[in-house]
Amino acid sequence: MFSRRGKSAEVSEPVEATVGKGRATPKRRDAEQERRARVKGPRDPKARAKFDREKRTEARRKQHEGMMRGDDRYLQPRDSGPRRRFIRDWIDAKFTVAEAFLPCAVVILLLGLFGASKSAQAASVAIWMLVVALIIVDTIIWSIALRRLLSRRFPEDSRAGDLRYAIMRAMLVRRMRTPKPQVKRGQKP
Image (cartoon, rainbow, N blue to C red; front, side, top):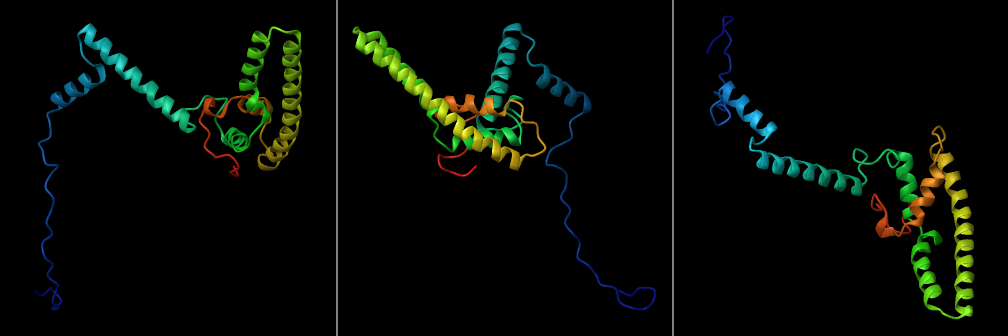
């Protein structure tokens, strides 16, 4: 082909156009009716209650899974934010004596209850004192290190409640912590 200036123009091959979306567009009335049915659910009271219950259960399940993964969107305000994530990871990466408090408390209580002699009760009291002293010393040591790290990593943030948050997390057995630990023991946070 020639253009007006006398030069030949390139002939391009026709491009195949994809036609539609593979189905007819629904009428507006039908689309609105379908959307309303999806949003509102069934009209029957029993079916409606079941529908609402399933919806709430699914929402709770999704929120719980997100919280256990440590997703900030699903965490409670006390757990959310990069500062709290760092505290969680730092505590989860180390073993603390406070973590052994609950199992020790059960053993000491059983020893005190079933030990009928005065010496068994005296031994349980001595073990209580020892465990509490170890927890206090260990907590003081790691809390100083944690404070230093936090002031270096997050110098502009408020430190309100950080130590209490760390102690409460450290006292729980690793399997019972929420959100679940994201780091392994010994791993750098």
